[in-house]
Length: 229
Image 1: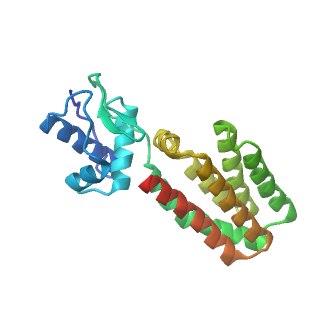
Image 2: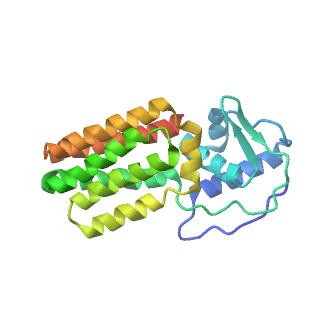
């Protein structure tokens, strides 16, 4: 296996790219051949002294570049192909985005609960109903999920917050979608619907504290799910 060097910004390094490089070095140093399995996630995180969340992002980046294959219930295997290209730049990691969203969206939900009009609440409700209707169809469900979170931002009446939420949502790039593909289940879709209903109920009740708690609980649950699998 050949590892090609790539540049990492000195001012804004992507941690998952740094960890991915360390995994490549480990594969080479320990002579893990194509078709062989990497150490378990727990062992690999301990060996590299990184969190399992950072490791998971790095493995997904390597999967996107064709270095490894993630086999559900089995492990991570080195691919047969030789890799000649850089690890792709895919933007912030999923956990970086979730951290920012927990900080910002909880307050957005609280503001929405305080000032939302009936029309704004109807838009949030319609997004929840669309998610319920299309919860088994990935693309339609994603669109409805986006509509839900942006409808809450619009309910604040603050266009800067809407723009911020659009930016954060658009950071859900290739790593995010690959992570979601690996861990999305019917149970998790139902939990997301329950979370969204709780957020909606708090906004309908014009209860900022409850809306803040419900949004934070939702994003913390997503983080836990993607961190632990």
